[in-house]
Image (cartoon, rainbow over all chains, first blue to last red; front, side):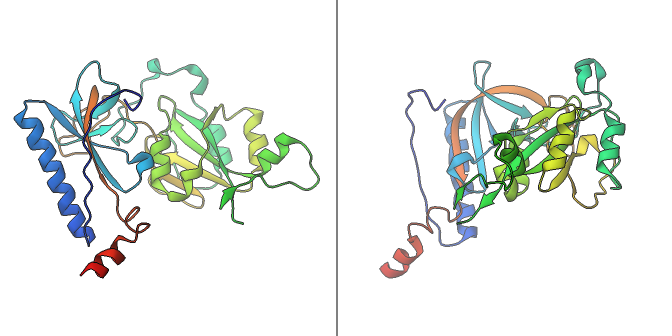
Length: 138
Length: 145
């Protein structure tokens, strides 16, 4: 999306308090919704990532389309939609047919490495290793 | 403040220095799930510096090697891989996976989520004071009153 040429408008607002800023945020989202409703664009308001721009709250307005490049998970009830990477949900039951055999049932081994914690692991698990760089202040 | 790779006394190997300069997080996921880097990073600010995950078979020697040289080890257990919310010690449970279609919505309806593609036509951000603080906006407002 960002690599394409497109026309956009930007609006920046400043408020003296967080409460004021949240009211403005809701006003702006409301304005978006009315604009899209009036021009007849079927949109979804999606819980979104603030990314490199920063901040703590963000919503995208997405036009659902098969040629779209953003992936959204949406509840049919209409109350919840989120970018796939941000979405949180209750996992559907495990289906061994969809999983490669390499990562099945490492339960006993992980159990032994985990030691005496109270976490009871489900049967079908895998492990990812993440390393974090040490932050050195100078 | 900047990133540096600390030198390790008594070693001159690149690999040894790299391994020793890391704290290790092991993320336990259900076998059919993938990690959400986004959710990991947004759950705790100190995880913002997580490197991209390396998926390993936990029986591999690589895990022992990493565990042996890690400065500290944190276990992260995804909720779908855990039958219990009780966590102790350095075990953290949370929603660390990428949600999938047919996962159940957390709303009252608990309906299966549907995956759709979208084109972004609008975007709103609440930025807090990230930019206004740096630009001394409050100072300027007070001066103009």
